[in-house]
Length: 73
Image: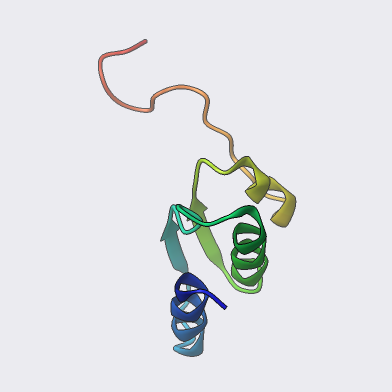
């Protein structure tokens, strides 16, 4: 179990209504990314990530392919 998984488990133990995870798989190898995303799918989480493998862990996924703010069209 890696440090991110431990932190996520501790957060779930506090029974939050929602967890917002910003790039939780950053700097993890594929095996640990999959494990952490599987763990995150066990509760109500909003996961912000560039890892497209996250799509496999949730049926409700939004893929944003353009900037939401800024000067670019």
